[in-house]
Length: 121
Image 1 (tube, helix red, strand yellow):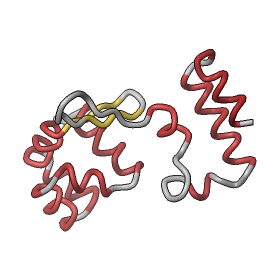
Image 2 (cartoon, rainbow, N blue to C red):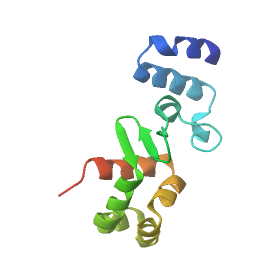
Image 3 (tube, rainbow, N blue to C red):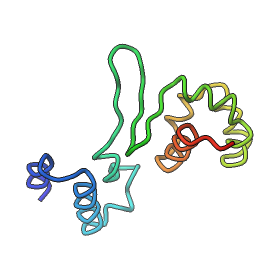
């Protein structure tokens, strides 16, 4: 089934592909292992992108973040990060934003990306 799905990937929209993977995972009880042993359908489809050279970029869905963006958030969003993730995470994020971002589960990464891309006043 997965082989056939991969053959059709170019013919369907990313959202349709995600939904097909989600259904496959749920049919085989794999959704309980997402972000552990199995990559979730959205990350499988959109994933992350490394740009040329040493520049690092992480993309998921419609959101994108790079290291300078994380560094700016670490400075400007400390209070909000502390409120959402706790003081210890906020302090470590302030010191090593890229490394802490990498260590977070996908749901938390998505929150950070939204904070970067949709700053609150």
